Image (tube, rainbow, N blue to C red; front, side):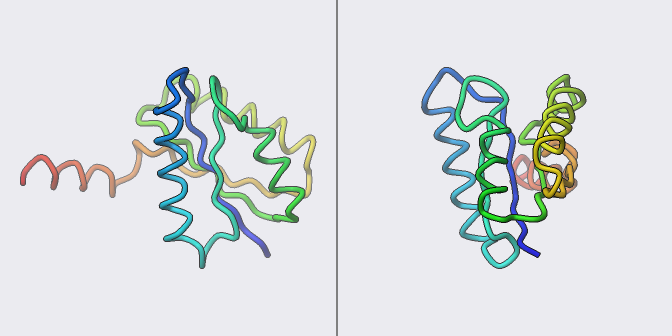
Length: 121
């Protein structure tokens, strides 16, 4: 089974904000290369690639399983409605992709622990 990680961020009109996401994805890709064949970014708005474009690339690369990480701190509309809807659209177009929606970034206990450690240093 070939596996990928898709990191979905909001997107921004500011190039440096989108570049930050690309930089984070690149760093994760280097650390997770034994677990994931590919680690890609996608943006809901104001950035490229969008979710469908990124998933098209994964399907063309014969990826079979995609872990989807919402790069969001809170469970707002994008996390609760928009991302699940985009994944339904992807599944309809690429039924061979098995998508696994991971908890959004803000739900991570590791993030909470890192914040506590950072703020108490």
